[in-house]
Structure formats: structure tokens, C-alpha cells
Image (tube, rainbow, N blue to C red; front, side):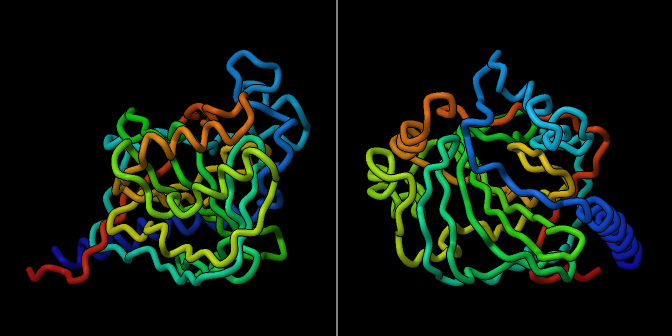
Length: 280
């Protein structure tokens, strides 16, 4: 039984590796910074249904077959028991808070650390928030979703990995609580301000159970080959924090979640980390 489990895990890991390697080599562009080029308004000519028509380099938004977000349904998930915990190595670094119009983002200016996936190191660049959540679990959406964007330099084009977390209404999120005054300030006066050292490990996304699949960026250019890692643990955020994130951005982005995309028979792995394997 033990040998059979290990063989299943090895095969599943190999298949995921192949998807990552062949799906990531074409990644060259990251998220668009200028929010004036697209919006989230339903029925708008610049809305999500038309992103792929606005620019030639955004064609994947319409024609891609590995688009994000998706629903993480139990019926589609492949369990990976006794998996490795998502390896993170974050450190405090100087950061800026940026109002990109379509969202609020924290950019780390120095080396803020990295995550390791199948032997490849991805370095943290920034994090941002969507409201409501973009991914869903068994059809259920949550109040906000946070994305931590990591990049691994590659001669053929940067590889991208995202660590995501979902939040429901409840107690305030500690990391967002540190940014409240700055978010209010950037809403009223500046587009970008220096906020000093920020420790990414305080975001607490190192869960013991997480989903992994290969998808895309959820904003133009909708680049595919992105490795998604979404913590299964649902965290909490206060009503005031959600309101603050929505009011800080432009009106068209108060609800800045891209609609769910077709699954297209992609593998979704649910990794379960346990510190010790049970004895047979």
C-alpha cells in the first residue's frame, strides 16, 4: 500500500511538472499597470468579455484554453496525500503601496524572499487584492482574494507562480490592518507611497492544504502557464477592510474579480501536508 501511494504521487508530480515546464516557457508579460486600458464593468466595451479583442497581445484572454480563475470543485480535484509543504523563504524588505486604479498593490523594492516549487525558486514581487474572490470552491465565492506574485527569471521568458488566499467576513486581517492609514492616504492624495519595511511572512499563506493547477494571469494580457497555489484555509477580513479596498480604487473596479473561466479538463491537485507519514 505504501509503495502504491508513493508511485501515484510520483506520477502525479511528473505530470504536473511537464505542464509547468511546457506551459511556462512562453511567459513574457506580466500584469498590465494602466487600468485605463480595461475595466470590470459588465457590458462595457472594455469589460472582461472583450479583453481579448482590445489588443493583439491580449488574445489569450479570449482564445486561451488555460485561463484563470476557475472553480476548485471537489469533483475535479486529485488528492496528493503526504505531499511536501509549500516552501517559503520570505524576509522583510522595503515596499511601496500603489493604487493601480483597478486594485491596491504592495510592491517589494528589495529582496523579499521566495518560494520553491519542484526545485525552481520564484522571487516575490508584489501582492494585491480582488473583491469578491476570483476563484471559488465548489461554486462558493468569498469576500476577497489576495494574490502574491512570484517570478523566476528564465532566458525564454519569466516563469510566474501565484500564491493565493481566500477571505470571508470576520475578524480583521492583520496584514491589511497595518496598511489602513496608507491605503486611506493613497486614496486621497498619491498614486504611490513608500511604506517602509514589510514582512511578507505576516500574510500567513503557508497552509497545510493547498490547491495547485496551471492557469493564467487574471488581468490582461491573461498570460498562460502561471502556476497557481491556493491555500485551502479560509481566512477572515473585516467589513471595514473590504470597504476600504473597494473605495480606494476607481469606480469601475470596486468589484474587480474576473469571471470564472472554463476548466477545460485541467488537473487540479489538492496537496495535503503532514509532518509524518502514518505507519502501515
